[in-house]
Image 1 (cartoon, helix red, strand yellow):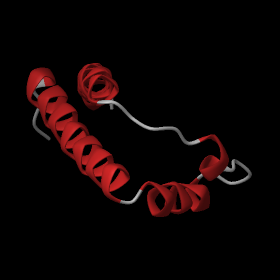
Image 2: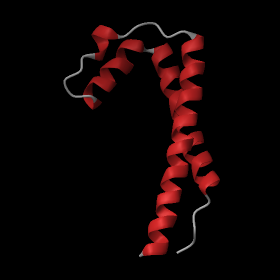
Image 3: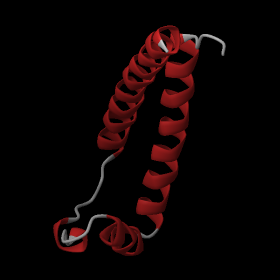
Length: 89
């Protein structure tokens, strides 16, 4: 099996997460109650519609940067671990 390129995996995961985050923000801006209700089904026992607040543009940009950086690092760690275990076994 080929070795994974850490940066490519990180960029792929970071970009995919950023795109999904932007889609989520757009849905929340358009239909905040419906989006909160949707996520209520995913997070059992947490009533998000009661704690939801208005999201500002700055919140969205900061969240976008944080999600990209976080998932980029996770992608690099994933590829590194994959390559390590691939060599070992």
